[in-house]
Length: 465
Image: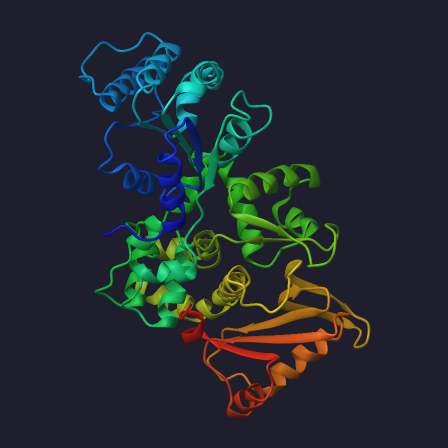
């Protein structure tokens, strides 16, 4: 498969490479997101480039493989004797990088650190000795988000202040994912994007020669499916007590979004639950949300932002027994087909937020956006709770948005409801965005033609960015 996306990151890496100065690049992101593929694309065809991946093994074995990679990067035969320790290995690498540009990658750096806890301190000492006259571009990469953020980038790390660039590699957006899904309709592409969470490796599993339904079954609903046990396996790799985390995720996926609700559903104390939720947030699986314009507090809720985990806990985990009985077709027809609409409601809101973020970043919003997010709260006029899917607040302007994943055209009544909600905000200039899977009524289309404050966005327009 051709390399897809990551143009910004590649451009930044090339700029670092062309500096011919010492560079310490830290790259991290969740497993399967495409970090190694990006690195391999960057170092491809570069002279004096070496790649080492940390292994869950002894220091001696890691040192043997590290030595081979260093010799290869610096032009020496890789069958030379292994270095006696990490300091010796790093010193050799820096010495050989004084007169020539060398790129060296340590992938899965946390595994090397588990084999030798002092690795960051040893590396820091060598960096401080050689950084002013070195042409080494050293890339440290890892999938353990908490380790990379706290023990590599954190201020208590020996490497703090040494990095010259950092990249948090995120899943693809719905637009970027389209490159994997070009043979599918917009609706099908949106669903396949959502159930894979935009993760590069999962998107690469999709077969363009079969239907969306068959792809979903092949990915999740047979005992041999590639993603059938993926969420559980990932949690086992990253966390202790995976059962507790799975129970928390299932509770959130099935509607328990407030701290006390999740605690009740999972029989966890408030303090214990906070620790578990913190870990899930660090992994990028869960997000704590607060209404835009308000401080974090009792109104905060927890949502699963990783589409693969949300799909698995909503539609796969409840059907595990039927999957083991090989009833894939029946599961799809009786559970998944109907459940997709509910599942896609949240995913469609995420897509709409990505769409607006693109407009903001490309300066297609006619005002400075100082706050952006979602909103919910009390409507004192109608004495009821209200929710707004998308809010972008400026000094005098505000955008309010509504997202509907429905098999029917959106009409003027939806716009009227949105205008009523917008009155809860003090900004004078109100702008309205309506996102619809199926399009809009003629009356609403005509109304939008005479008002620049109304934007109607269907799937075709969303994918036309």
